Amino acid sequence: MFEQFIEKLQDPKKSYITLETTPKHDANFIPVIDTIEKLGIADKVDGFSTTDNPLAKLKFNSIIAAMLLQERFKKPVLATMSMRDRNKIALQSDLLGANNIDVRTILALTGDPAKISDQPAAKGVFESDSTMLLDIIKCFNAGIDFAGREFNIKPRPIYPFAVSNAFAKNPKTLLKKFTKKLEHGAIGIITQPVFDKENAQMLLELFEEAKHLSNANKGTLIIGLFPITRLKTAQFLASHVPGIHVPKRWLDILYTANQKGESEEEKRGLELSQKIYEEIKELHPKIHLMTANRFKLAKQLLDE
Image (cartoon, rainbow, N blue to C red; front, side, top):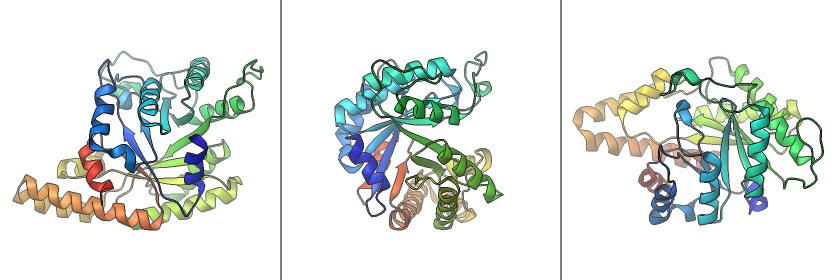
């Protein structure tokens, strides 16, 4: 399962699509899985991801959610692990547990700051950034822990992924981050959402340079896509989320549609989203689809 998944990722001729799932503030993740199954989405993607308490707000555990998704659909799930919530001991312990339940594609994330949590007294750990987790995975794949002690029962192979911004005023910033994460062993780097083909092309060029600088020939860039059907969503991303660039053209089209009513706004947003989805599929068919659990919207794109 994992070997075929990574082979598709690394083969430039093959398409590769993963779908993000966001566990809820609930004690049961099964309803989310049931929704995906009812819509038939699993047949249209190569794998999934589970988020890890995004915005520092309490959600169902990402590793257990990944296990439940894998058991249902028999496809790999990228389980996100955040540096915000764990020191190096907890990271290693969680990795060992995840390995035993066959959750072995890990998305390393530094994590949103604890100060924005809905539990404001929470304190972030942030012992390091996400490259520490990538280094820990490298050790585990060599049969040792982060202190250099050998395991009697060695972990099965773990496949490390990382994330990146999709936009920066100085592109060298992105190049530096790509290079650093590739040097620390990431085999796939998922970008924040991209909304125009030129942005995607720039990222691909920077990534190729980063591969050369890091000697990471098998590293693969995965373009993040977030379909937008509301002006307020586009404006929020444009104004408040660093590392994302929403083109003025999108904002203008959605503004005009908004004046005509909700159905027109949704129609034009879907058209824009479908267009960039098709453009990226043709340019670089390695896509990570994020919909904030709006799985019907994901299905509309994937059915095209």
